[in-house]
Length: 190
Image (cartoon, rainbow, N blue to C red; front, side, top):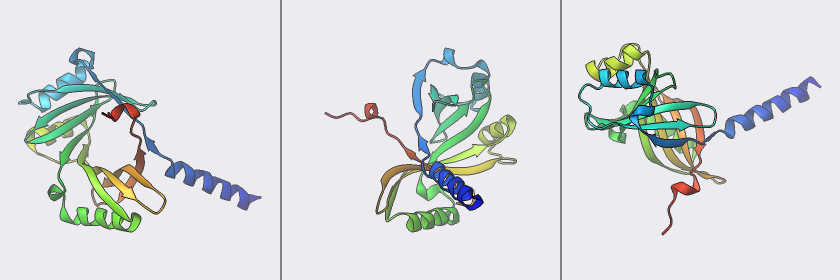
């Protein structure tokens, strides 16, 4: 009986891991709808920012505010919780801007997992305390900062052809991946 219980737990756990989906909804909002603490942090960290677009996002469980702006020729996305506390900073980068060793490890993973793959979007993600994240922006200082890579990619196997989002640690090891579900309203047919 114990063996069967373990088997059921294993199968159920495996199905949970493989069935993860990214199902976020993002909606443009006015600055006045954002927590004042988030606005103050952004103003302090990005002193010379120009235009900031604010968004509210939810996946049905968690809610967040997101600021999107251009800084030093890169698109930045700063996520805040609903209390205005900064959660992470994501910076859109190109393949050639990644550490070559890390990129090689991620590419090796892709080659062993998929018959074909292509990168859609690569973001370097910084997490840490509010003060340390501010130092990343205004002083280019990375002490006490965790670095990871959030990569959207198309991966094709014999049985699947999906858009995935993978989170890889600073050494290129996969932390988690999930299928990106594209809503019908996101695709316009003419």
